[in-house]
Length: 351
Image (cartoon, rainbow, N blue to C red; front, side, top):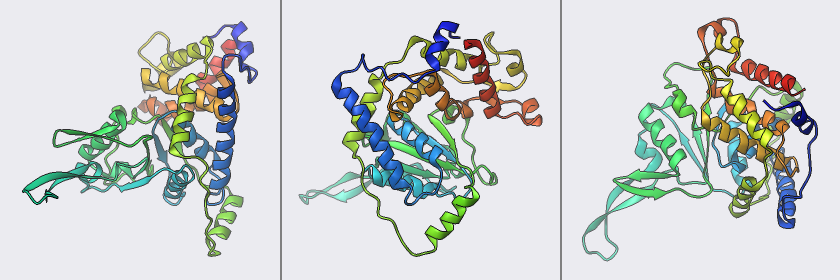
């Protein structure tokens, strides 16, 4: 872990822009203002859920995918649709069902008459996956074969139909939803496939005051018109900006040490974790921690990544990558509790 000297860096949010040029500094300010604008627009139709909105935007800036966990009625579909609208991105939706086929996701080839009238030819008809923002609704309700078609596209950013590759639109984001309550008739995503998602974002019930606002807004017959804050070109520029944000060496070290400590079969794991965790996070988690931390720094208006930024994205990155064992579940120990304790130990070592 970082030394005591390095710990002094984490206590402040540095705004040192010496490693960036003037255009990059202006772009960071523009990004922060864009995020504030998107958040303000979304507040017209989404009450609360500020944490989910921030994490989804961080994921988009990091070119990752998000799995939204929450019971029905929390406006997950409306949130995803509204994000696509405020960012001027095309929106697609797939309602996953037990009888959904891979071709219903990716598209298929059909035999059609040629335009010149000389015979027939196969024409590729694009599926709903060919959109900038794809809502994969209740992804755990479809068989593994169809799940794999989507998850492969998430990784490769392309689909293969009849031996031909078709590149997906850029940018491309999948925001999948899953109901944590209903398990009957579902096909849980295996850990290897869950690892494709950068974040898991858990959406909770609104507060009492928020539910009063929801009742008022949704029963008065008024509909809000959302403004387009950015477009796909600007979003891609922001993604490139995230790549260029500097990361101090001690932040890299913290990310690596944090992930290594989640693995119960290694000497890096603390004794208490070995008793509670069955499986820990892999190297991909380190990449997502760094990318997410850089994006978090940018939306905060900072020019360099700190350990505070890394801690802010630790739970959504690690939650689905830390698998607790039966002993932990019987004691009520969750992945969130494991992450919280690991971060607390890291802070104590830095003091």
